[in-house]
Image (cartoon, rainbow, N blue to C red):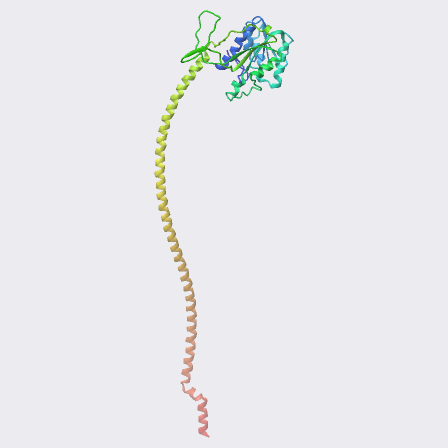
Length: 379
């Protein structure tokens, strides 16, 4: 069954399959035991499929939900002379007092804040006639959340069994409790309809009556007094969809496990090949690093040789600079010596002229002593 609404996880749609479908459909199938020929309210009806299921056996069925889009969809899809839908909150139902024989509300209470939960149950009591019946469900917080370390983002306040019982007790003192959960059983059944149901739990050396596990969900049929409670429902209620989707899902899961196991083996083989390839690459890298180390050693030796050469060149350049300086000094000294030589040569030449002059007759004649001698000779 398809729906034009989108599944968000908050409201179940009949297009869903598997575990969630089994749980939701089964609750409504179970509730049909108590609504035949009755006026029934499906509170928080969502998409409306459950209201339609109840309406098929009830005298009339009203589905109420706070979501306008869901009510519009349900009215078009399921509405008829016996089934109708109204928009309204479960804490303030737009319905008259005492107008229903049975109120059904599945997986609703946990979506309300703790302060709103008593108001919802008070509204259910208000719209029920005095001997009316409430069929309600709630997740078992101990298994649903605590044991699985799971948090449903749409749940505002989940309940433990004693909390749920205390809330119900304020308006519905008489209670008959049922547990619901998925499991794996082997079924043997007669082709003929029969009332008796037996269930066994066993191991290698014994079997004993199956007490049933603790439920993932509590389903409670409640009334104001024990006298108005209906007869107990069958000891066991089973449900499967016509497509057997949950069994097929289990088979598909097993096939998927085998497929994934094959993929894992293929992956392991591929990883082995990759590991060998990586080892080969690592060997190549090691060889490359060895070559690089050798090349670096050669480069370092060459750099050291170059450094020595540069040092030798620098020493030569310093020596050349010193020689150039010394040459400049020598050139300066040579220039000075040449100048001094020229001066001495000129002085020598002057002395030689003086000597030559003195060696001449004119010089001797001019000598004073010669003039004096001649004076005495005359006297």
